[in-house]
Every structure is written in structure tokens, then in C-alpha cells.
Length: 161
Image (cartoon, rainbow, N blue to C red; front, side, top):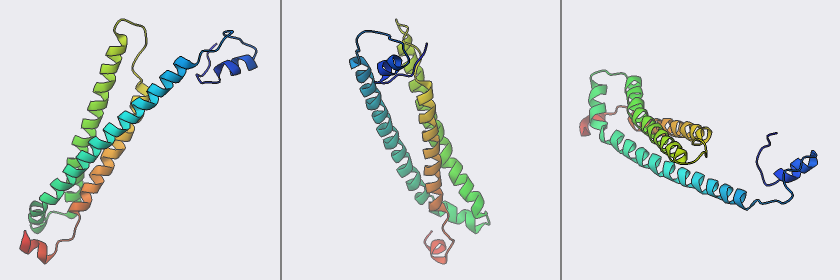
């Protein structure tokens, strides 16, 4: 019989008439739960710092490209095309970089867990959640950079740039 893990596992087994052990030892479970919380916190901090770095660099690049964008607007390039191009230029490297980093970590973790023991595979379900969050954050960051390119073309821009 399989049961979901938790601190109340023995109580749930006793409630249905199954007694797995005569004594409870949840110290190791608490240790693993604590380690899992630390790892998720660390992964969140690292992903946040990395995405913040990408966001700052992408916004800085968008502002620095103002002269190029003004020139393109003057020759008749539609603003929607410039926004799509800016979004792709920001989203592809950020999103693909995050996904490649997370996949590399999962493969490294899976390899480490397979060395000399039967502990199982890397936590692919949690990795998929992390990849989804990273892809969503990359799209949001790319959207922020588009805001820097969507300003109206004014005579001041033409004169300054």
C-alpha cells in the first residue's frame, strides 16, 4: 500500500487499521523537509537575482538603442514590428538561458543521485515548475523592455538622436 508522506503518516495508517511500525521516527523526515525548503529558497533567490540582472541589462540595452530605433521609425518601420523585434531579442536569450541552466542543474542532480546508490532521479516535477516560472518571468522581463521602445516619435527625439 502507498501513502502520501507527511508528519501524520503513522496516525493516518493507524486510523485505517494498518500499523507500519511500533515507533515513530520523524526526525529524518523533518531533516529532508527542512533541506527541501532551503533548496527551494536558494533556487528562488538565484533565479530572482539572475532574472533581475537580465532585466537591468535588457532595459539598459533598450534605452541605448534609442538612436537606432529613431532612425528605423524615420524610414517608416512600423512601431509594432519594432516592439515585436525588441520582445524577441529580450525573451529568447533570457528564456532559453534560464531553461538551459535549469535543465543542466536537473541533469547534474540526476547524475549525482545515481552515483553509487538507488536514490532515484532528480526532482523533475519541481524542475518543470521552476522552468515554467522562469519562462513566465522571461516573458515579463521582455515585456518591460518593450516599454522602452514604444515611446512616440517626437521632434525632440529626432533632433537629439
